[in-house]
Length: 338
Image 1 (cartoon, rainbow, N blue to C red):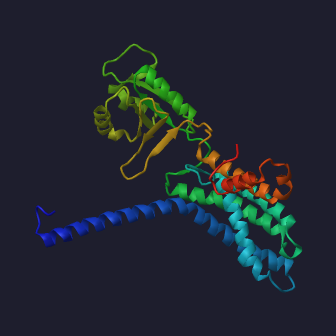
Image 2 (spheres, helix red, strand yellow):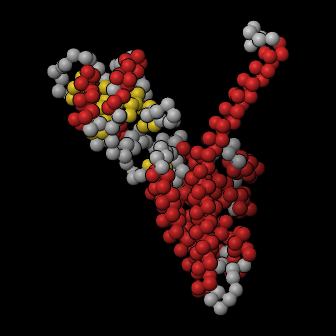
Image 3 (cartoon, rainbow, N blue to C red):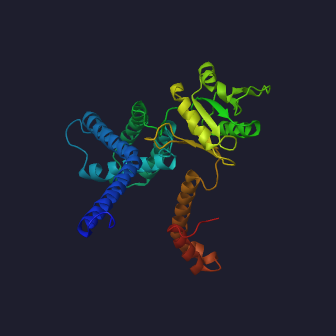
């Protein structure tokens, strides 16, 4: 800027560029927060609103038919506690993991209800209001939460998945060994494809019956086999060829993915405006998000249990101070029980 503008204009130009960069970063942050918080906030509003409505109907029709109403404590403390427990249960059941699956929200509601009922039995009489209200609110949540996800799917929100497995038909373009590896990856992922055809990267026809055709016949193969997605093996095809073919086949209206060499994932996006899909092997690795989350929950529960029982447990410990120190460190995430 200093080279092409006067000193005053250069400072103004630089300031405008910096403002644009920060504004773009701010919009990106807002977008990420929106994507993360959208579903939990919708769930919370629907659960809270539905429970309030059930409270009014059930309370006036059954509990307080002759007059009266639930105490203020129930509205400002008990119902929010119920909603929070349901949301946490949905979270720990993977209800907010991407892609979002409706079955996990139902599991979370059921798990949360069990926890609420157990805690309900331990509460003093003045805080026990109605088990029927809990059960009716649970039924509402089991119906409402999947409906929220159905509505998001109707608006083509990419991270919402209807059904446990997607049914797609794939073409894998690559040499025989690489096509086999990528096919195994697809079958091992949560996609569970109904068809995976191999296409030779060579332009000339071959005699290998493992392939449904060669790369020059892809448009016809897509039409005949009703293909949804085409996967390029980057080990067998150069990136320039991939770009050229995607441009050449744009009328086929299929999604494109790329399988990197020696990778356990397949990546790609249908549009420059979308974040894209990631197909990975569906293995329950120790460091997966769900397992790390569940392990953290176990650590917290055990730490609390050990600290509550410490007056008794410390008598059998060789190093009581070290035991308490470990409990505190595990509770705050510095260490983990093994």
